[in-house]
Length: 235
Image (cartoon, rainbow, N blue to C red; front, side, top):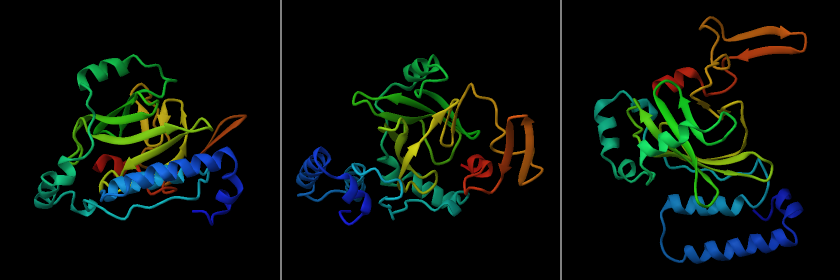
């Protein structure tokens, strides 16, 4: 990490003190054996002190193969595994949480979001001023209400750094500097946001161009990302 140009440029003065203090605290926690998940989280905590969108730590372990989603036996084995049973969950009452989040405004990061047609999540602020995203309702085979989908922290640029679990494999990932705007965050959209043009164009074409008005042009790329509405609907 210290060889990165971004580290050499940024980590000076007060930031160098913060970097070293964080290192000392995390090092003490690693004196005893810890899980690979906890180790990954600690390494990311250290890494996030350096503002570098292109620097990341990747988590190799996968706990479910998305190709096995329709395999009843393998799916059942995953549901009965320790990894699924011990997946982080909220300690909040989901009924009260949904009631509280329903009254959040469209411009509030907190609220209820749809993910495709099968899952809704609730994003709420925690006591440490971070955010948790919890599954509220689910018709998915591999996500249960109460399970944590991701954790987010607002950064100094007004965007959000997200520690998330892959939709299928439960592989941990850090996604940096995501924008919340117009009731949309990453691949999640608030329940009162009904516009969906960014996901598909009537299933007719893989790309589209429109002149919406004299100042605005619209371009749709169906395969610009590996994420798609088909993937949403399959979860």
